[in-house]
Structures are given as structure tokens and as C-alpha cells.
Length: 604
Figure 1 (cartoon, rainbow, N blue to C red):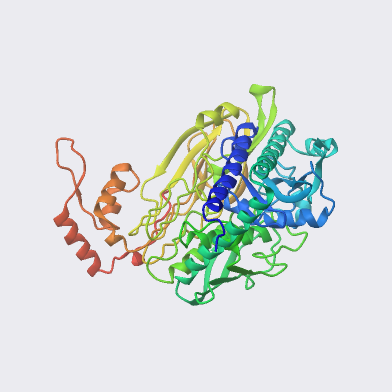
Figure 2 (cartoon, rainbow, N blue to C red):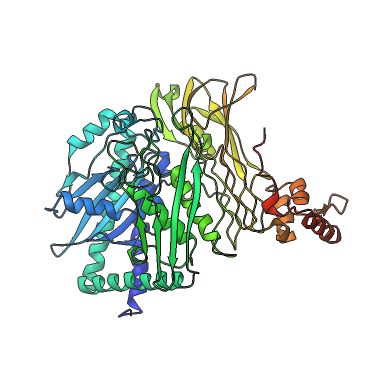
């Protein structure tokens, strides 16, 4: 029972407002476009004993496991002081992967550690041996080469440790850009500290602490009610990461045990039946596994269940040491732990919940982080051959269909959940020596269904002069996103190189290549799969999708059974209702419901 049902929800919103102010400061002061434009960062507030209170619009992969980082801060630094700040990117001590630099600031109220403010951002460069923050081919952390800081004190009494800054500037390819991002992270965390102190001065520390406990207890109650409404079940759901030559010829199978106990209002997710760590950068970290499990479960429950530690109490995640989908064994690399296998884990849980019956779960969405999201590097002759490194977000994958909604067009990946922003083409071209020839939606690439998966995007770009290196560790080229409950599969991702004469060479899903002037990269991110029988989709939605260019007339006829006719004189498309009824009856008799249609292939 909430002791103060008026003050507690108001304070919960106040915590969210503090997180949003932190985020706004980071967005406006960061230097790299992966942070300042694409918004690949998150902020959060936690209790002194490592319980997540608020994360507002933080990326799920960043925030739903960050309590492990604050726990390591307290373990490694029992002498926490006012004015301390810690740099933490250690994947073996609770961080996501080495590319995510987190600043942790313990917040003291009347001399007592009461909260921790966290600001975390994906960096443009981290000193990897290859010019990418996703070193998929690294056999171990030594070959990966990233600078790793196991919760290192970088500020004491408000004074920055310049030794740490110099270490980073010496190893990172774009030192001035990194330094600006580092200072932006510290500034964001300090804003969180300042606002929490003001809040406690205004309302009193005891009242604020009581409301935090009430909010977490209420969140647990909401989670318990949501789980109690599910059917009891014990099942195993599977997915698989693409094969990768030559390091993973069989890919990585992902196997998830799911047990729903509505009487106890508890969900248990068992990840122990997965392969051991692999000799490349695709291993998951503990923080990522937890974040991905929580993400998938939240996606399958009522959308008003708060995302905090109170809700976490009703979910048990079982994992084992030395497992590719579990706790990594040092020195196995986890460079790509926030994507790839991450998406497959989330989608296995989505499709597992879809087996609970109509109206449950989700389809699979895009699993590719292809050329439209490559990490690019080179030198810019316009700026005296200054080096540059940055991750692009010129195009993103399509989202999965849900029981009550079509797929989200700018979904990107489930670990980002539509929160990452698309790059401005003009801004990218002004910052880097590249030209974007086209960026488009690929009509008919989403999985058909009563609810349609979002279509894929395709981008074509290349250097304006000199050479451009692109590193691409993409999944979803071989194993396309799968539909559920009768929904159809979606288009797989695809990457190709265009030579100066326009000849196309299809590239592997994992590739590092150099483009010379006049050459281009054509990158298609995957679409999202469908949910439910497409022959039951509302015909007006099909008409709308064709008019918008998201679907084709051929697909309307053959996948959805919708006959469109033009009234003439240049008028708009219209549905021929009589012909549509006949077409759908004919397709139903022939067994052409969504589950029996062939998967959509990538366009050549």
C-alpha cells in the first residue's frame, strides 16, 4: 500500500524530469554525432544500494542493467566521498560493452550516500585495434584493444584526474571529440546530483526516501498484476544468429527457457542451455543479458508497468558463467554484446510469448546493423587531413508487428527501441567527406500480417574524395525476421559494394572494407515481420500502405488479398470490395494464409 498516493507518483515524475534534464544537457553539449545527433546515450538515477529508480527515455540496453555498475562502484570504492565521479566501461564488472562509457556520481545528502546518478554514452572511438567500436572479429579482449576502465576514479572533490584524460587522448583516434563527450557525461551526471540535492532540501530526505520505497513497491505490484493475468506455461523458445565466415560457420543458436507462474506472479527466464563463449566479439555480458530479458518481457506486458527495480523483483534470470548468452569468461571479447545476439535473445522471448495465444508476444523485427549503421573512419582533406571516426545512423531496420500495432518504421533494434535518432543527411555530409546518394523505404519488405511489420530502409553512400573505411558487423542477412501467429517473415538485410561503373558485388554480413572515390556502398537494413493472418488485415490499412509506398499493389493482391482499382481521371486508389472478398475467399481455399506464404526475399 502506498503511504502517500498523491506525493509518490508526483515524485516519480520528478525523478523522470531530472533524468530528462540530464539527457538534454548531454545531448546539447556532446561533440560526436553518435551522441549529439543519433542520441546513443542514456541517463538514470539509482538508490545508494543499486536499485534503478528512473531512466525516462534511456535506451533499454543501457539502463536496465546499470545497477550492476553501481554495485561494482560500491564494492571497489568503499570510501566514496562527496564530489567523486567514476569512469566505468568494464564489461566484466557490470557494463554493457567497452564502447559505452559511463560516469557514475554518488550523491550525498547530509553526508550520507543516498543516490547514484549515471550518464552513459556510446563513444565514437575507444582505442580498438580496428577503427570501430564493434570489433566482431576480435578473438579476445587483448585483440579487441579497447581502453577499459574498471570503475576508475576520474574526479575527486570536483577535480578531474588529468592522468586518465591523457591516457584516453593518447589512444583514441579523435581525442578532442572524445574529451568533449567525456566532459558532457560528467556535466550530465553532476546535473542529476544537483537536482537530487535540491529535491531533498525542499521536501526532506526522509520524505523522498519513503516515496522512493513506495514507488518501487507500487511498481512491483503492477508487475505482479500483469503476470497474474498471463496463462501459466513452461516452454523453450529459440532463435539464431547468422553464420559468419570464417569465425562462426554455424552461427550462434539462442535458446531460452520461459516459465510463467501466474499464481506466484513470477516469470523465470533460463539462459543456461546456450553455448560456451565464442572466440569473437559476439559474447553477451551479464548486464546485456539482464537488460535484454527485461526489455523483451516489458514489451510483452502492459505498457504502463514502470521500468524500475520494483518490476525486476518479479523476474528471475538464470545464467551461467562462461556462456555466450550469460556471464562472459575473461578474456573473451564482448565488443558487440549490445546488438546481434542481443536481438536474437529478445526476439526468442517475443516469439515465446506469442505462443501463449492470440494477443500475446510480438513478431521478430530487424536484426541487422548493416552498412547504414556502419562505423566509418578516414581523414578529411577539407580539414587538413584531420582523422574522423563515427557511427552512422543513416537508415535503420523495421520494427516487428505487435498484436495491436504495425511495426515501427524507425525502430532500429530492440535494444534501442526506436529511441535512437536518424542522422540528418545534410549534417553528416557537412561533418564527414561522404555523399549520400539516396535513402529510401523499400516497399513490400515488411512481413505481411493482420498487423504489418515495418518496411526496410536502403541507403547508398560513398566518399566524396580520398578513401573511406566502413566496418559492418551485421546480423539478419541469412536468418530473416520471423512472423508469428500466422504472420509472414520479413526481408533480410543486405550489403553490396558498387564500383565506379555501377557493378554490384554482394558483401558478407561481417565486413571491413575501404571505398575509394567514386565507389559506393548500398546498404539495406532488414524489415520487421508480421503478426497474424494477413487475409484478416483491415483493407483500408492495406490501401493506406500502398498509397504511402510501404506496400506494393502486387503484395496487396497476393499477400493480403486486396484488389485495388483506380477510379480514373487521375483519382486516388480505391478498394474494390466485391473483388477483394472473392480474392480472399480464393486465397483461403488455396491455403494461402500468411503462415504458408514463402518468406520475402531481398531484392536483387
